[in-house]
Image (cartoon, rainbow, N blue to C red; front, side, top):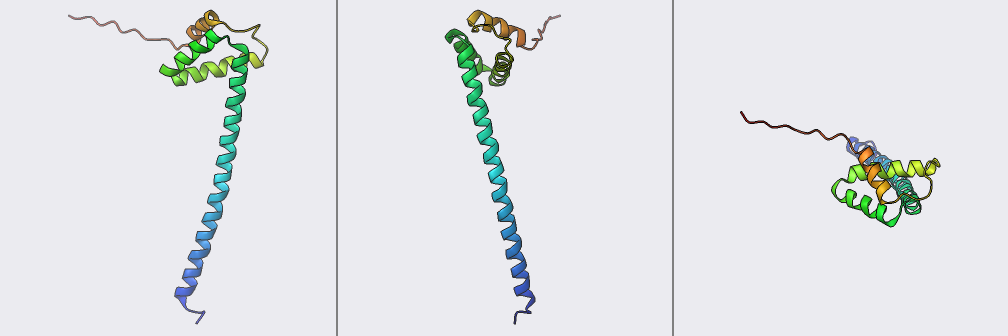
Length: 116
């Protein structure tokens, strides 16, 4: 009876399903590794920011992060890169952070509306 086509088909489906499960488990492991690496990078970036930013500068950056999270992320990456390359002397205070934010902020378009 082992020559039954239904049994053979069922066995093929089982093997295929097991292979899919093995591949999915491998993929999950890669995703976990990537997520863990990203968390480590973010923690390292936060440590660098704490070292090089005064409390006022950090508060200003956190305020920007509330309204513009993507822009704040870009600024954090920029500050961390500057600090790691040794281009930051001392600590960045609130005034310097304000200047840096103005410098990095994309040009805003102004709309001049005239009524006829």
